[in-house]
Length: 293
Image 1 (cartoon, rainbow, N blue to C red):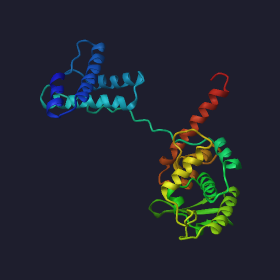
Image 2: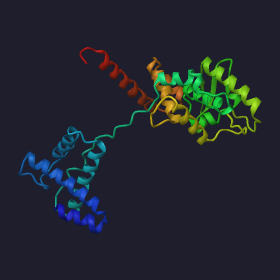
Image 3: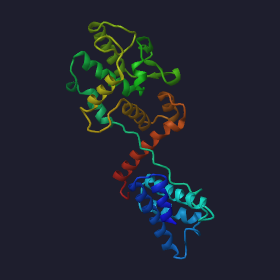
Image 4: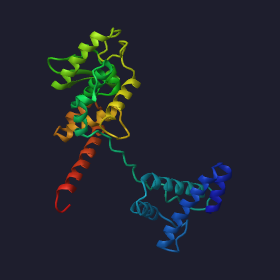
């Protein structure tokens, strides 16, 4: 029965030899599993509990969710083939759900690294480009705004008296984000330098040396180069600073609903991924600090 299926995959579905071999290995793995349970079992007598047991067996052995789901998909394909040709009377894999793929935790920069980057004057020059880059870093870290939101900021969006920024997010939805004295001072110094050294071509807040709004590639490179001064982490993007902002807020006691509003998320479930990050930190602290951990 299995050989018929593999021939079908090979000749009628035109699958590559490697893919066909992988299907064969997956089905052979399942056969070995159910025969170890009861050598009287066969492809025709398998039920859903056996298939679920196989999924659990693979997870217990440490297989990744993607690997388990691929093998389960191969088994479903086999039974669909066999059912259509009346080789079996049911498809026991049809309703068996595979494990959910683990969502990768957001990458973020450690607070100590951000402090070192922002506070160490020796890491920054006094050229327009360097002052712009430092201001850009502080702005992203202190507000958590997206790259596109940053590029779209105008001078009129900054309220220096209230220390707030009006941010226009996705679907033109606006929100107000507060900021601290450090960003206020950085923006004030930057704007003075910008107005002295550039000829403004737009109402944008952050401008290139030519007086134009920043390009997405400029922002990405500025962040990557700046973070490279204090961390060797591979992913160094504007969105990593957004993750860093959210993680820092939660680590210092901010409520998740407040963080959701500050980030401009539509759904609380989008924000909740950051609680997993902070919980991972808590687990590390526990293991390091508790005598019986």
